[in-house]
Amino acid sequence: MLFVASIALLISIFVPIWRIELDAPQYPEGLIMLIYANDIAGDVEIINGLNHYIGMQTLHAENFLEFTILPYIIGAYALLMLVAGIVGRKKLLYFAFWAFVVFGIVAMADFWRWEYNYGHNLDPHAAIIVPGMSYQPPLIGYKVLLNFGAYSIPDMGGWLFVAAGIFCLFALLLEKKIIAKLFKKRSSLSAVLLMGLFIGLSSCAPSGPEPIVLHKDKCSFCEMKISDGKFGAELITTKGRVYKFDDLFCMKNYQKENNKTIFNGIYIHNFEANNELMEANGAFFVTHAELKSPMGGNTAAFKSKKAAQIYADKHAVPVTTWAEQLEK
Image (tube, rainbow, N blue to C red; front, side, top):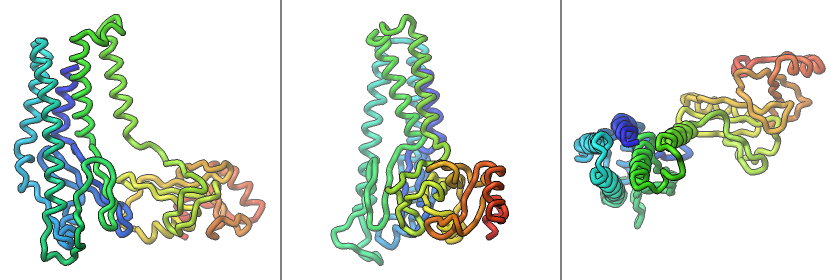
């Protein structure tokens, strides 16, 4: 398991360790800052422009000593765990585990210190000054900063750090024979843990639409509550932002207003079911005044062309595809 922990740490050098997301009405897809072991990426230029107006420091990787030494520190811990796994000495295992715990605590404390200075050391001559206001992002979780919502969460590299610590801990517990007695062979436990980690990491990736909660979720365009499970729709951006709508009419207008935003997922309610979302690209559409959808789009989506054709024939109207709907 120490070998797996070592590999996880090595991978974390090349992927984002942390992410800070900013959500505001003027940025429908949101802004994101990705923190690597040696760099800052994402919408840094836009964030720096916003920071300038409220007196916050602009962010540049070369201004942080941590970005110079952190890859080497992570590499050293990866090597330490690899050596501990090869040598197999109990004392070296204990040292590797507790040294890694101390490193994690120091790293989070240093991150909090940076966030504090970043949010409190403001330019007194800034264009926008709110007396008594500071802009320290949350260490982890959500916080409101003026009209922005800030999310601070681990990214892939951060979760690999957690996984490395867990594997190191289990190696220690196995050495002390605390949990090995639950299994006849240590290899069985290792296999279970590896499978659990794989499933856990796989589940982090979003798949498919987010269910619409009727009578609770609001339309992102007209702000009305979504109450009908036959005409709703949903958009998911490349950054995972979810926007829900009570009518195809609202979703199409939202897309027109945000035509620079790229959407990875476009979903529409199946008219023949209740609150069942399906991909718009494979659906078939019928438009008729009798449908009376919430915002007057009066368009229903069907999963099969046959079902759509039957409904269309009753009202002497054509069946259209999603591509044809976008042209309207």
